[in-house]
Each structure stands twice: as C-alpha cells, then as structure tokens.
Amino acid sequence: MSHQTVIVLDFGGQYNQLIARRVRECGVYCEVKPYTTPLAQLKAMEPIGIIFTGGPNSVYDEKAPRVDGAIFTWGVPILGICYGCQLMAQALGGEVTQAQDDAAREYGKTLTSYDTNCRLFRGFPAQGISWMSHSDYMARVPEGFALTAHSANCPNVAVADEGRGFYGVQFHPEVNHTEHGVDMIRNFLYEVCGAVGDWTMGDYLKTSVAAIREKVGSGKVLLALSGGVDSSVCAALLAEAVGRQLTCVFVDHGLMRKDEGDEVEAAFAKWDLNFIRVDAEARFLDQLAGVTEPERKRKIIGEAFIRVFEEEARKIGAVDFLAQGTIYPDVIESGAGDAAVIKSHHNVGGLPDYVDFREILEPLRLLFKDEVRQLGRELGLPEYLVMRQPFPGPGLAIRVIGDLTREKLDTLREADAIYREEITAAGLDRTINQYFAVLTNTRSVGVMGDGRTYDYTLALRAVTTSDFMTADWARIPYEVLDRVSTRIVNEVQGINRIVYDITSKPPATIEWE
Image (cartoon, rainbow, N blue to C red; front, side, top):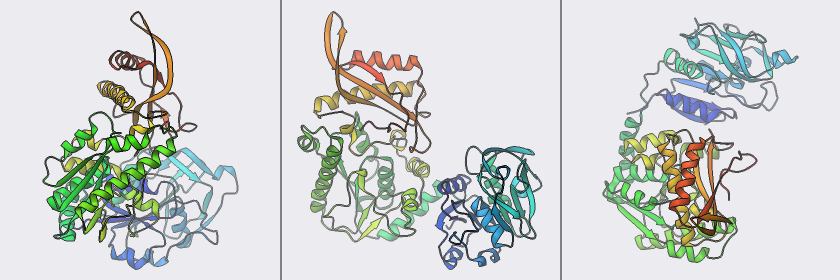
C-alpha cells in the first residue's frame, strides 16, 4: 500500500521537523527534503501538497535559497510559512522588502484577524493568537492573491490564491503558541490537498514487515540491542518480520537501573529469535575500578561495549545486514537525505571494527520518536519499554559520582527505584520528562535511632522539557518529595541525606556528569 505524501521543503528554519511531525499527527505521511532536491525527484514522489518552511534568510538577498519556478506549474497545492511565504510571493511576481519601521516587524504572540471564508481558516473564530517571527514585509502581493489575515501592524499576515491552491502565512502554525495552528495545517491537508488520512502505525507495521522480508530474503541480521526505545522497537520489528534470521546481542554491562536487564529480556520472550544476553558486569566494573573522571568512564564503557559486541559477532560469523535504530531526526539533522546514517551505538562508541556484514539496515529511519513509541505499542512491547526515559549510554556509571563499586551501584539502583515508583504513584510520570537519582560522593553526619551515621548524600533530579535542549526543574509537590525521602532513608542502607536539584538547563545540564 502506498501512502499519500506531502513534501516539507526545508529552507533552514528551526521548526522544520516540527512541521513534519504535525502533518503526520494529522494522519498524512510526509518527508522533509532539502530545498536543493532536484524537481524531478520531488515530482516522482507524487505529492498531494508541498509545504515551504521558514528560514533565516531574506528572499531578496543574492545568496538566499531559491526554488525552481516550475514547481508552481504542477497544479500541486503549496503552503508557504514565513520565509516560505515570502519566497512564494517573490517568485510569483510580488515584492518583499525589509520592514522600514518597527511596527511592520513582528515577533512573538500577535493578535491576528482571519478571513474565515478562506479554506485555511475555515471553522475558526474571527480572531486568534499567532506566533510571528519576521522582519521582512510583503510590500506587494502577487497578482491573484487575496489578503486572508491581518494584524494591527501588518495587512498581509496571510495571503491566498485559492484557485491555484497557494497559501502563505507569515507566522508559525506548527508551534503551540499559535492558536488553532494544527487545525490550519489540517485544513491545508484535507480541505485543500484532498488528504484521506491513510498514515497510521498499524498500516506502517504491515508494510514495513513486508518490505523487510523482501529486502532480507533468507539473509541474516545482527543488531546491538541497548534496551533503549529505538533499538528495542527496531529489534521487535525485525523479529516480527524475519524471526530467527535475527540475532540480537544485548550487552548487559551491569550499569542499568533495577531489574532493567531482566525486563528487556522478558519483553522479547514472545518472539522466536536469537537473543543473546551477555553478562559483562564483572568485565566492565574491573575496567572502571578507581576511575572517577566522567569522560574516562564514558570512553572505557564505549570501548568495552564494542569489544564485547565484536567478540559475539565473531562467534556468529558473517551476516548480511547490520541493523541500527536510526530514526528520522538523525537522518534530517545529518543533512544526508537518502544516504545511510551510521548511528553511534549508545552515544558512546562507533561502528565496531570487526563485524562482517554486507549492508546497513535501518527500518525506523522514516519515523519520529513519538511514532517509534506508537509502533512499539502496535508490536506489543510493554509500556515500560515503549515509554522508557532517555538513559545515558554509560548508564548509572555517570550517576554515581566518583569511583564505582557494585555496592554503590546497588545502593543507587534501590534509591532510584523508590523515586521512580513514587513519581508514578503520584501520577507525575507523564508530565515530568526525565527524573532520576544521583549518588553523590559527599558524605555527611546523620542520626538514625540512637546512633550517629556518616553516609552518602543522594540527589534527586527531575525536569520538564519539550526538546531536551533547554529544561526547567520540575515543581514536584513537597508531600511527594517527603515520601520519597522518608522511604529512601528508611529502606536503603548507606544514605542518610536527600537533596533536590532545582537548577534549570542552562546553566546546568540535565545529567550531573
């Protein structure tokens, strides 16, 4: 089954992945393509619509990104956003200039009036807030275009040539700040482009399984399984498609959270595949003994992981495919277009030196993270794995400050498990984006019963974020923190003091090391 496709043509804007995600959330498949993509290649995709993204340039600059004017003769609807709007206006005979006064420049939340007869704004209130970000101005709109939205400072916030299906907006409908923004995108897709909404994870699962079987044939597939969301869903999809032709090597380095290794292994019991769990805890801890510097820990763990994986690969011998959990943001950010992207496993190493394979297999490379999670649910993976939080490749090694011992790791595992259990019990696990405990190397005096203690201080960390580039510390209710603190001090030996990290990113990072 082939899906209807929308092309998001990328002119370098900061929200371009978000535009694509919004389109897919509306049930329509889309791909992000660089503006330099040859028109013949775009046309071969048979898009039902094209979206021009924003970008940092001004269209009148000599070196500004351009598009071949033939794109406007295909009869395919086009939605231009910010730079994309101005590019379309200029290409079709309008005039774009730098705003001469501050009033014509607009940034941030702006009260906007809509012409609700326009298909883009059909069903909307007459006014709403839109998120502006432009210092250029359409001094003259192209012939055939009507003004379909305005603000106090700008008469042409949105323009449209409904006969040709061309629409332009000088704000960002894809961001949450724009009221009804997703509805505008949905209107473009369904009212203008004639979308039928045939993009679902259930359909994607069926077509992917068929495509993998056709590609792999009778070949062998090898996957390094980390236990993270991407590698786990990748493994499940391949297991569903080719069964025992797949070998998963799960390197258990002893640095995971409580029961996590067993949970990962249990999640794959439903499939008939070659699942190899390598118990490498002693090996990793021996190499990490006495190491306190976090970057050294990372390098040791990355190197050891690759060596263990190589040893297992040698036992298996030649394989036809080395599978990786590369996802669509990796592909877009690499600028690689259709080129293969080699994703460093666990963010700590590179591609193993010794793996005898013919081809890289990346079955998730067209999916965003939220789609990967949904695919995991379709495959029947448990929710604890599908919704697993970001977890650093070095694992708890960088959440134990200072030197590592098995005793310290076990202490942290128990404390972290209590923290996560109480966050879930309080119903906060879906609103806090990441939360974990850190065993510091600070010891302090305490009193337990009638005795004096000199034990470790445990730090709790919790943040809210939309992109993990910036983050705010989570306002966990005091009564929840109180329960966490009381339970940890009473149930976990070696900890007598709990502190809560109230630093945002920046200046801090989310992890401590």
